[in-house]
Length: 363
Image (tube, rainbow, N blue to C red; front, side, top):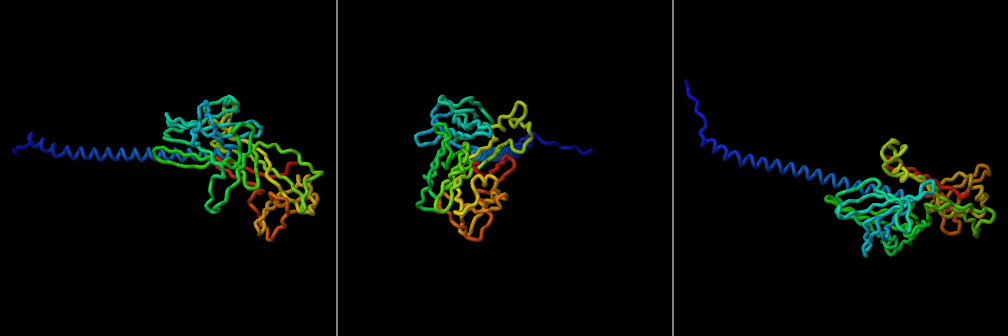
């Protein structure tokens, strides 16, 4: 028989002395990899949260008739610094029944969170029926909003040009639509973003669209007349729905049902407002009353002028009315082509977005 020799105690100690450092090194490498993966996942989640926050603010700005930074926040404290940086930004609109809707995003620096609130009205004492509504975004290390008049923004392509500020009051102190920009700056562990918010139907150089305006009947017996034709007003009608309740089942939380219609009610609305002036040709055969039953179509000529093609089948008449801020009719320069400008019906639909605009006369 052959005897088998085992390991001596000294040999075991030597083996352990050699193996332990290698084991600890492997453990360190594995731990570092796990920590790096966790850090990468956290960074990706923080980036995703930041981008979703900006997308939400942008979508909700398109559903608002006005975006404003009130002097006091929802709880009565000072909202803005002397430099104009504010921790809260508020939104306003009216629904198709004329009811006012307000909502706001308020930043809590101590909790590093951005909470969404809704309220029904704005009285002298502050918001009415204030309640938390929807998301609370956490992990924001800073947030600020600043209202900037369009006249203070330089346009590189137009050096020396100063845009005209347009303000459209809605009957509440400090709440006005128009073309001012609200710039928001957000920062978290992953990203620092700057984003500019504009209310829907922001006024342009020749139109002021007022979201809560109720058009008055237009007198047809004595139209305003210039040397080259008649000035005829037109109006815009808008139906909108923007947010998480678009294209989702009715019973999704917050989006409808017998006792759960909050978000849907805040996102849904319809408004009408003055769109601007049209100048009819001097030999126009179509009255404003006749135009109420007209077929409308936008056109643009070779010179870039925008026209409304007004066709009234009952009269057998079709005319081109000029879209203008002045009172002089400019004859179209052929060729004319279909225009996607102010008289085109715009429809955008998809997850989180549905927006329809049509145009007509205040008849």
